[in-house]
Length: 244
Image 1 (cartoon, rainbow, N blue to C red):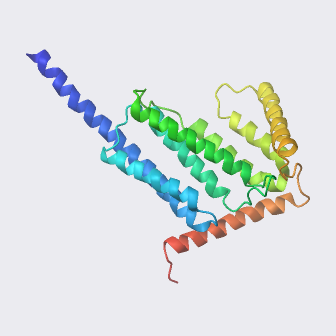
Image 2 (cartoon, rainbow, N blue to C red; image 1 turned 90 degrees about the vertical axis):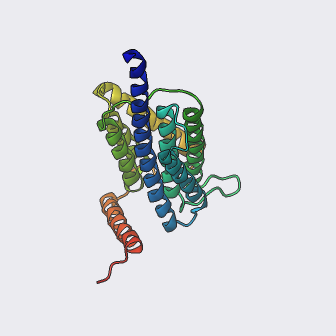
Image 3 (cartoon, rainbow, N blue to C red; image 1 turned 135 degrees about the horizontal axis):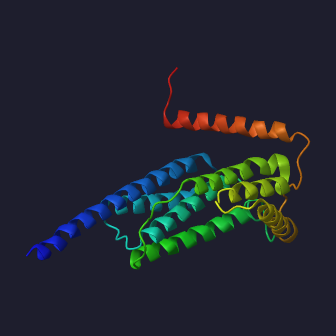
């Protein structure tokens, strides 16, 4: 009799835990998507990232409400994170000019890769809905945090210091997120990836990237941070009107 009762007690507990995880995950996805949705109101070409942000937010709300069956949590939430990254990239490159005839513009490659990333993320998310997969395990925040820092560092350095230094620095910093990092191998790998980016973007795609630092690189770098602070203040004023 006790053995018959025990499975029925564990079943609801597992179901409640799963629903709790999906609730937290769905709310997190919805909040991040809404933040990206707000960012689309300050760019000149918001249509595609805005639609993706709205759809992602709706998926997050539906997941939190229990309307979306999450059979493979790793695939499901990992795919949604890829979609969020694609939206962020589309917003960041929205003001860059696109393709002109057969010539690539500065915004062509970022939008192309962002579209591919979004499509891949949607496919991975659907795999998590229709097929069983592993649950989300505990992870360390150090590696992803360092990679994110490397991405922002590349964005800050690309204009004043050029493609070579920005790419090399970003690769070195991102490699530091691994606990198995070896300096000699990392230096060689970063040099190889920097050369690959130069061949791909400058030689093959003929994108107008500056390779080396400008004469006033430090001034441009500090000017970028000042502009970011100004734009952040403007966004805050739009979202929360401040009366002086």
